[in-house]
Amino acid sequence: MVSRIFVAGGAGYIGSHTAKALARAGHDPITIDDLSTGNEWAVRWGRLIRGDIGDRELVERVLRSEQIDSILHFAACAYVGESMTDPQKYFRNNVVNSLSLLDAARAAGVRKIVFSSSCATYGEPQHLPLDETHPQLPVNPYGESKLFVEKAMRWYGAAYGLQWIALRYFNAAGADMDGEIGEMHQPETHLIPLVIEAARQGERLRIFGADYPTPDGTAIRDYIHVEDLAQAHILALKYLSRGGESGAFNLGTGRGYSVREVIAAVERCTEKKVAFTEEDRRAGDPAVLVAGAERARSVLGWQPGHDLDSIVATAWAWTCGGADRYRSGGGHGSE
Image (tube, rainbow, N blue to C red; front, side, top):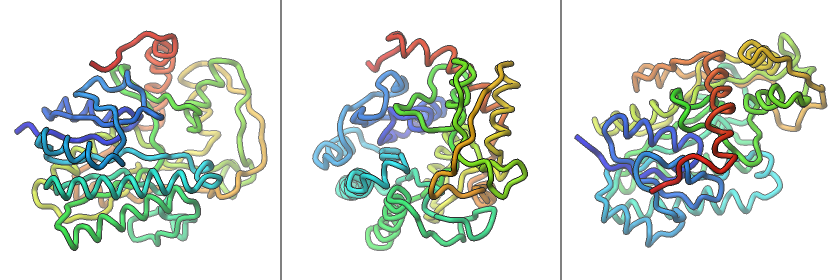
């Protein structure tokens, strides 16, 4: 049965990959995005409605007229550092606008939502791997904003019957296996595309912290391919449609890689050396963040299918192909 899925923030990195996965699974994704950080060319599966999820009247009208079955909510500001200097922006966009979306869904009778949350809701690790039982004590406004929406959904579920899933991402990475869409942020803050760009341009990469208590001194993170994330959203929708219990799931591989290991993987893939400089640690960066994701495997039936080399290979192919095409003004816009 074809379902119409409302994809809030579907012109962004993870949202656009998920819209493609939805279409391949036989669903009809309908994207809403204000294109403040998303890319119009990335909306190639389903229609694009240019608008803000904080526009309650618009959202409610679309949900009703399109007979939307479920909502995937990706729309958010997502730079941790920026959230520390401009918390108002994060609480306005991530919290206030999300509440408006929840209210529009309630008014339109849409009862299922899958929300893009983050491991930033946990704060400093008290034990590793980080599983869903770990205390949620965010150390930045970005993580606090995501946690607020999780709490709001829980209370909306108790009071209004909302069925919800919060997917707590670790480090999204990689690109579409077909090379049709991929990662393109302005500014770019993610490690893998930064290492790839350093390899391409012969520039020096900045490593923040080489004295962590890790085997090689650099920070360790859990990288998860964007297509694996997209598949998790489809499985979460199926779970809710079967009457599954609302709750949160971590999305990660359970395997961490250091900054130096990522550099080595890029060097293997590109056959180029990556020069780098070592700088002081950034405030608030934990030494290790690795997911405990057994709950997603056992309850949702989710299984990540990509390792670090696969992630880097798809990111490199995208950077040298599709990304360059879009930067030069080519590629596909939305209809």
